[in-house]
Amino acid sequence: MLLFANSDTFCKALETQRQGGGVTVTLCRQQRFQRARTSVRAARQFVGDVLAEWGVFERRDDIRLCVSELAANAVLHGVPLGREFLVRMVWEGQILWIEVRDSGPGCPVVQRPGADVQGGRGLWLVTELADEFEIRDEGVGKSACAAFKLA
Picture 1 (cartoon, rainbow, N blue to C red):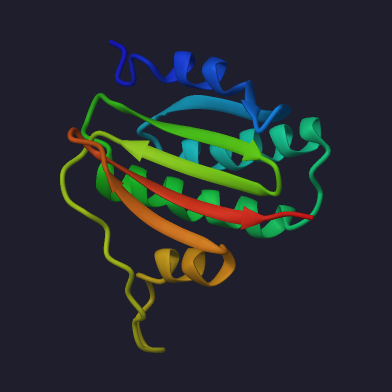
Picture 2: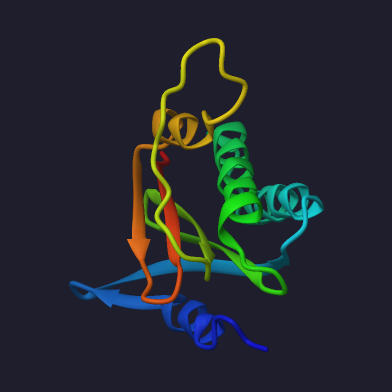
C-alpha cells in the first residue's frame, strides 16, 4: 500500500527549478519508515547520511535531534497501526526543510511541561532549535516541518 502516492514525483519535480533567469537547484530526498521505535534511529541515520552526501555539516546535530523528536512523535502518537511515516528533506538555497508526515488523526501541540514532568518536551525542543516550525494539515494526516537556515 502506498501511503504517499505522489511523494517520489514530488522530489523529482523539485530537483531543478528556473528562477529569475538563473537556475536554482533544489535537493530532495525522502524515505518511508515503519511504525516501530527502531524507526526513530533509522530516520536520524537517514537524515545524517543525506546531510553528509550533500556536504552539509553545519547544524547537523540540531537537525538530527529534531528529526528524532518528530519521528518519535509520529511513532508514538501519529502513525496508525500497519501504516508508515515519511521523512522528507528539501534543501533549496540556504534553507533546509525537514518534514515528518503521518496519516494519523489529530494535531500535535507544543508543550512546555514543568521540571517534574518526564516527557512532553519534544516539539518544544524542535521549536527552540529550528528557525521555523509548522504543522500542516494534509487532509489525511499531517506533516510536522522544521526549517534550518544554512550558510
